[in-house]
Image (cartoon, rainbow, N blue to C red; front, side, top):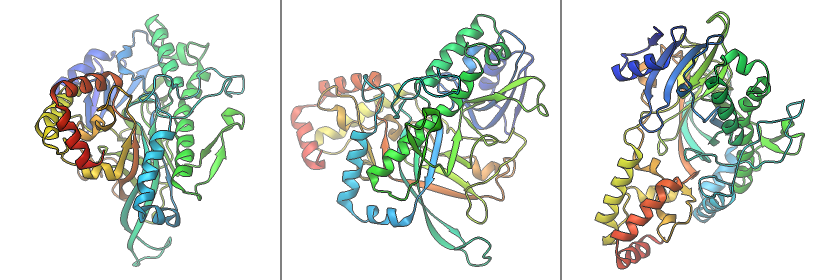
Length: 448
């Protein structure tokens, strides 16, 4: 029987799912907020230690969103202040973000991310586009106010400072998709992880190196593009060496990855790989960050002097949770949206109770399926996920006691939009149940 370790009481359904999935030689460590997604069936906030030389690994453990994550760039307040104090510039910036950042969700003609294949120096063999590769992607300005000294080492002089970050959440796009296909195919043909990842090309060691940095490369280029759009001229760029110097990306302050895979430390496991399902591997990450739900923003952890280059170690293989708990399925959420539209939109009132806040802080670009497509909010803004809840309960166990928590709230953020397969039926049902007069009245009142 596989070994399961947990920081809190383990849900019986989750425990049984893990035991059915793992082999006797494998191990799972459950972090706070751990679960198995009711949508994708992928595990969240769980660290798997997988034997490298044993066959029969169940590929359902792995998510196709390999090495997705979050990259943050700390901003100069001289860039941020003029933008926040100019309502017209804010609105224009949100619109320009939506029309400039490529997204696979908004267009079937877009493919983002580098290819997995490369030359002998791990450099790209073809050009590629940086952009959103899934519905959970976002990029934009996040702001927080927290207490710290005006300079390092000044004790007793703490005061409130505004911290502003340009943040992007995205994955590796094409490289992640190709890696997943090749790895799953290889394992299903009876290969071990060692055979699949340490020799050959199915997927092979070069593919693992390429996919491990593909997400970061994609995010840093998105961030540099967003910085130019928002007028943040003090964001520094650096040449992307894997592109042969043809592309540039922002210099990250914090860079964390989830769904990462790497060879386990020999001190912790003998000839094994560790897969960090929906959680942050703080050993390989730069800095420490996590997420709350979309409207609540992100969490960044700093040391007492306000430095984001924090080193974290704990007994859970130096990991912290990233994903929050899902509260409702996409089907339940779309049914709720339809009910709200039937109730309120026909009266000339916004269907979303928080529409004013959303208009000020967020923009998105949905695929065009009719006149209602553009104004339907992304499902994540309808309460699909809960807020973060692990910091107050498990800071000591996770090694976060001596760090300073900075909660970054969204100010100007581009979201990926609604997945086309979920948007099309939504638009069709709204067109069926809403009168034209009700829609016009709603548009006139809200200026849509």
